[in-house]
Length: 291
Image (cartoon, rainbow, N blue to C red; front, side, top):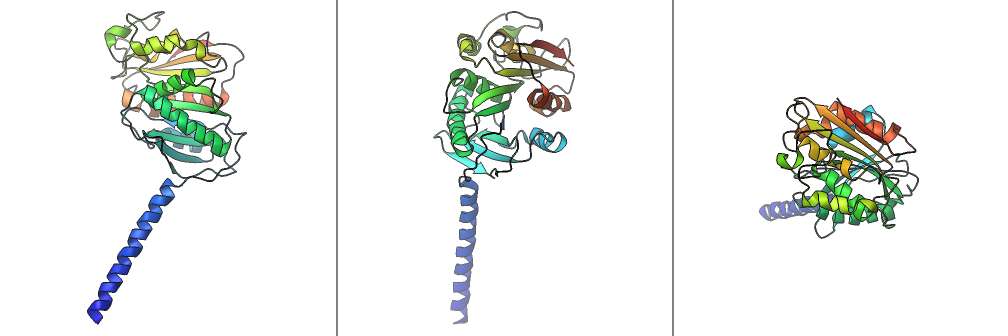
């Protein structure tokens, strides 16, 4: 009898443990409640290839705690089937909320990411009423935002993309021979298919869009961040001015300007905060800043 009682208790404990795990999973995957935040402009942070919702944690923490840009943050990711997973939620008291966004297929192409991003942004607009948003993307995350800006710039089902910060994004891919070494370029040695697409679609950009391109250079004589040629990160120069409301370039030079952590440098986060919160202009601005 005693042995039978112990067996029953073990089974009950196992059932409770399994139930608890299922509840945790349901809590992670459950959709946050709808909240009216139509007057807020969220900051969408997007990783590069191989990244996840934690890839821009450092920037999110700095924007929230050091610069006080935002008081709430949550994470969300999307699968190739368009299934959205949330971690956390936003409340009615959210101010300038940060959303750390990830793609489950984190090695997919940036144009695929853009299509999935559109699905997710439709959900965010329906859930929170967002009419505008700002986007910060590292590496291919910046490309995804640019595809989004050109492909869905006039789509009223998604929040209007107001500002883009592209950090170390390879607009003209990764071959140094395609990009050259002259940072004052007005054209590149070779335009790749990706850059050609951005050039062809440039007139679809929302004329009120504001863009900051951050690039890295290991030295004055070595214009690359170790992965992306500096000029590839600055190739937005060829299609944003004249189409976007404002366009600014920032080049960081030195051993710390490496691709993998360019989005985490003090300068990148400081410049991003300035551009998102303080920069304002009524006319197109082209500025090249070497630091």
